[in-house]
Image (cartoon, rainbow, N blue to C red; front, top):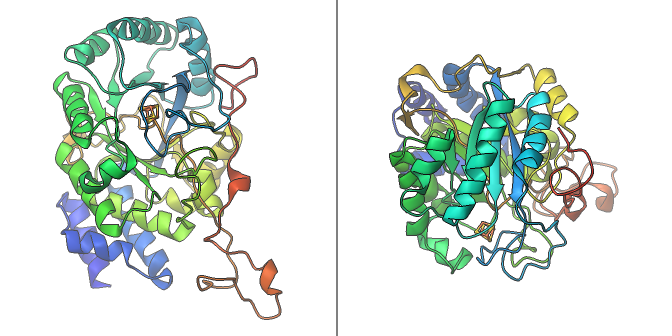
Length: 407
Ligand code: SF4
């Protein structure tokens, strides 16, 4: 396919595709899906080999947020039955982080619900960062605390933070439909503050909120402009008790196309599969490793992921290897910058938490209705586009509980 040859050439040269080319990737058919994955996989291997970076989430403060992000189980008025707790103490957070690191993670992502940190919160998190760094040599720490005020990014950097995450989530034109308590511009401002303070910027998106292909391309091109070092791709987990609980739009095939598009637009950036991986990619997760070079190990902020051991087995079985702390994640030309030229990867997970939406392959792509293999009862043929609430498990272990974390 000419489109894919063009995109591979551009990806290897770090050249930005046109919007039309990015849209065309999203519009490819299921018949062409493996060709799309193979093409984007060439770009991924060129810049990152077969390495997979593991990141580990520690939810420092869960729920009770005054903001109204529609996708978030921690939002104002959320009826989702999630864990709710206030700030973990530094030693509690360090203990949780150590579990992830022992499981193979090289980055710890410290996340707290809320609009943004107070200066006292920055003190707390600074103490936590120091505790984690003292106890775990070589660890990368990313903070994800919401909107930053002047000077806070610098203080986090001084405390030893390597990166700061704040996602754009969706296109500027639809942002107001998703959240009303802060703006898209607020989010851009925080990513720029992190950048300016010398933190590695991490910023990504959430797919599956009812957005159009144009919205997805808009947000990914906006991210390329912002030049983060890492781009987490969340697939909406439609939590019961949130306004987007009924928004089950994703299929594994759609998720793969989205990841391929992100890889083509941000070829040399750490593309991370974030929340929604197990829920939406399901049995297709290994194929997604050909597109993304980074995942979260174990559980998410408020939902449970597959067992950490299963993550490691999947990586090995698919022919990839876990990236060690002795390797720099980004290509050499980026050790200093972002989505086209920067420093070190980030995080990506205030909010969405991450998991995803469906799966099930019948005998060939079923039309948007029931699958139909010859001889199979119609109701027994799995469809990829039906709600899979059975795959959404609220996190009940790890940080904020007495139970061991999943790592
Ligand atoms: S995404 Fe962050 S700011 Fe928005 S409701 Fe959730 S915790 Fe609050």
